[in-house]
Length: 296
Ligand SMILES: NC(=O)c1ccc[n+]([C@@H]2O[C@H](COP(=O)([O-])OP(=O)(O)OC[C@H]3O[C@@H](n4cnc5c(N)ncnc54)[C@H](O)[C@@H]3O)[C@@H](O)[C@H]2O)c1
Ligand SMILES: OCCc1c[nH]c2ccccc12
Image (cartoon, rainbow, N blue to C red; front, side, top):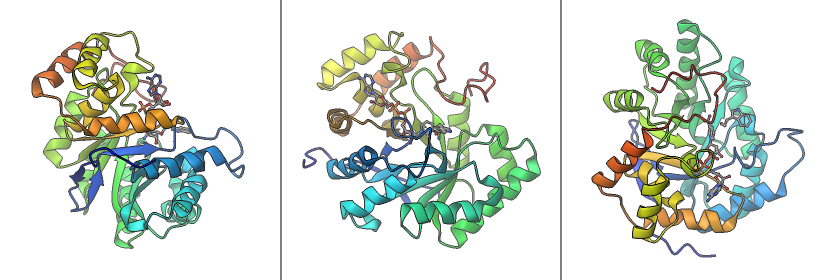
């Protein structure tokens, strides 16, 4: 199926690289709880379909156990490597970042990733350890194995540790972000430091948070722009310069999401969503790790 939609825009990162503002994720909907060596053909097929539809930004992670499927999908798609933006993340093997990246690259069947992220800051409470891990991430970039480097699920205190000693600042912080988790303080911090924000869980208001206070405004805007409420959620990210990562195993949904490229929300509409969203708090991921009074 050809992609008939407006192309996905890029965001310029602080290291000069560009990132497509809508991504297809191989985590939720796809991650394996069991044996990694059991290949999931449906994941390979869906990854290929995503690229056919026009998703060139693909999000993976070692813990999803789907890097082989992602790499196979890419190889079989025939899409040139330099047309794609591929992310993977490290957490289980954070004790050996060079080894972890080498293993990920082997599974992905490629010799570099576009973005390599530390998946979460919860591996240590020691400032020195955070600084040492970031130094190793810088080394991966210096060796050309990762074009850009960043973090995920970091709070300002973790970023502060990095900024004390880094030579290369994180290009991105990938966080859960949606109208019920707006992270005003963290986003302000990102802006001040030149870090791009990447949103996972952008559809939470229509999935885990369905029936909440943004339903009315999402439905009204969906009607106005002739799209689904989900596309309003994706656009709400993009119009705030936030890269959105979504996914689905359903072709219709993957195709529908791309309609988020066909319109823009006005600043007033974004404000209306923000006001309604701030009436509810929802965190769907890593809930065991965050102090949930913490809405930063
Ligand atoms: N860095 C991290 O810690 C982290 C955490 C979570 C996810 N991620 C990444 O982000 C990607 C996307 O995450 P997500 O799944 O939270 O994204 P999302 O919020 O966009 O939700 C996508 C899910 O919503 C479902 N959906 C879409 N429309 C729906 C509808 N109308 N009704 C009911 N369900 C609907 C889809 O089928 C899919 O399963 C993951 O695959 C992964 O790559 C990263
Ligand atoms: O990044 C998505 C959240 C996540 C963290 N650790 C995992 C392990 C398996 C599947 C998802 C996750």
